Image (cartoon, rainbow, N blue to C red; front, top):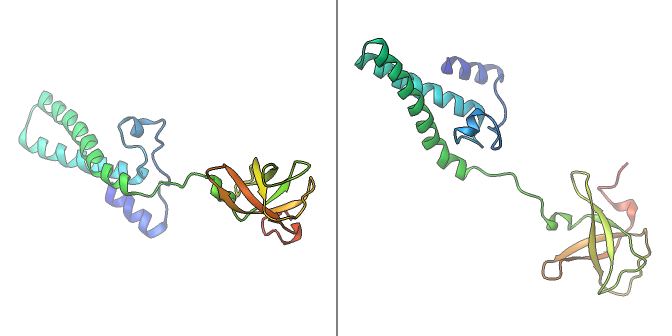
Length: 176
């Protein structure tokens, strides 16, 4: 079954997509969260098949074979977890959003003035969400409420963004 599945994936591109959700589901409850679904299921099937094959050769009788099935399932879970755990640690995770993602974006000034000690602006993130952030001005340029500014740096100690004047028509992220 596993070989047939993977041949189908390679030749036609049809298969499971995604990862095992870490918060819910059977495979995540077994400690396999974050692994590709197809890899986790395939590995579990192969290990369970091999252990049940060996157990079927070594033991006979209904009770013994039921025990072999239980052992095969436990071995499949443990083996899959042992194999996928180190791989999961090395796999790259999705990068979480940070404040530095706003650097290089334009913002709209929302306060009546912006100075070296005061100012707020609204900035839109790449995903379309907006945030009200603290901004500070460099130089003597005056910002009016509603004017567009360019965020060019983030000050982590003061937790604010440095801004400078920017023509809204030049914004590559502006809605069309």
